Length: 542
Image 1 (tube, rainbow, N blue to C red):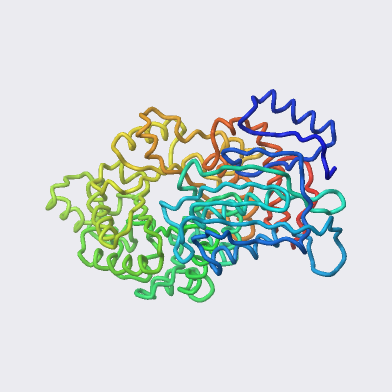
Image 2 (cartoon, rainbow, N blue to C red):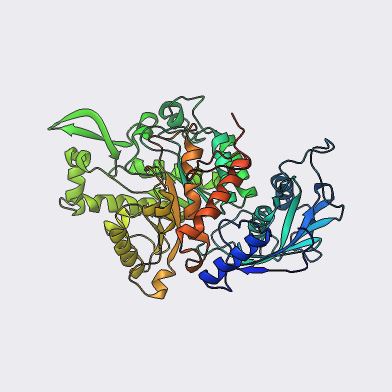
């Protein structure tokens, strides 16, 4: 039914749940079509059964007259090309395969308030947009180009095809913005090397779910694949292979550039003093020699915190990292430090006595982390550290972000309360370690997380800046990364973007997430199934 005399309005804010279900039942009985929905769910979303046919041959993106981002905005121009293909996946010019209904033109007109086409997204970038779809046009208004990108993704999800292949979009009004400013995905490229193409494909899928931070855990104990200009031996001796399993400077620039075009920040992590075994292969005297009694054992522990040369090395490395990665944030790690090697080393023990630390090795780690944070602060970088740094009562700048990674819901809620009471900003990752897999629909556990459900004032809860999905790499490489990540990570994406009260039911989310998973599959993302069922367009890749 293309031309409807009767119009039904479906608003996710206007009706109670029983009323909403009753309206959907009426629509289904009348055979009317509404789009399945947008994932993550917009803050306000009003859709009608009035729909308009779209002809790829008469479909255009355009700039509004008062656009701060003038024509030839690289971010938007690239987005127009990408989204044309995403909106019309079956369209091939001149082959006569598809049936196009009508020849009326349809234009998506973009208006952006702030000219930030040549910059990178940052922690203060607005992603707010509003979208109005009517006959012959869609008006997309945003504060920034990054908000315009989120609106283009939403519009692309509103377009659907009927059984004969005609494209349609329904009359729609949307006002949307993210609940949390930081919505991240962590990839671990040390335990298994991930080819650049796998990272780029992940960035694409992140944008489809409106994630906006790629946390690149680029090095760790097993390997050091980052090719440093300043210290080339770190990768030539610390990578799995010095030629095939490294990220060159060109590779890193490619990832950052690709992420920017999707409105995604790239947050590098160089974790220390623990998780650094691969560093020691290419940098002598960096790690602590372990002792067996009074004799060196031939093994090495964490970074040696007592040598001035350690901090000279770190200052030079982070100066390079700060110039390569444009984001104002840098992750310094600070987790899971094994003190046994430090305890065995006579030079470390002597330093402890000299500093008055006694036998408390958490004070030695605090000494080290404070120095590293000061190095990055001098480079105008804001540090993110794992929660261990706070737990050890280390003196760090108040603008440091604390990253919660461990514990049961009860323990991480207590940690959220303690950290925010101390005035610190916090990121939550503990409930979203999706490298842990279980039989069945474990996405439901990720969907029902309540990041602000902890004891604290409203001011404390404002200090929770977002959350992160972590995909650690012990059992993950390019062969299984995508299906293990998607669509399970998308459950967390909606929790971090959408209004919690409007998305409280996993049962109501299930058909929308199923539909979104099929959208991902059609876009070439090998997203695993949620349960028994099928997609109209099954995955065709090999």
